[in-house]
Image 1 (tube, rainbow, N blue to C red):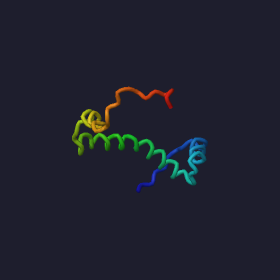
Image 2: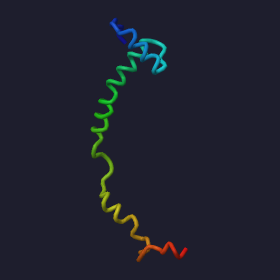
Image 3: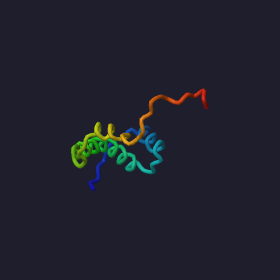
Image 4: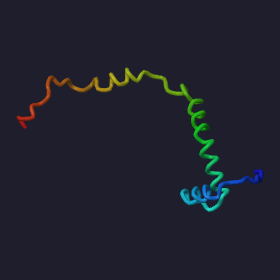
Length: 81
């Protein structure tokens, strides 16, 4: 890992450290970088697996779901109960 010197807003980094319970500026910078890079990596990962695995017809599955249930001709009369 390389060592880099950077100028950081002291109030901003202190607020980040307090908000996330971080002990060092290094932890704050690391968290910020991971949050910045993380979502794009996740989206790329999800897009890379699109279409892999399951093949089927959801509409067919939904229509066949209750085929074995008995038909109900009308709703029960709530006054009869």
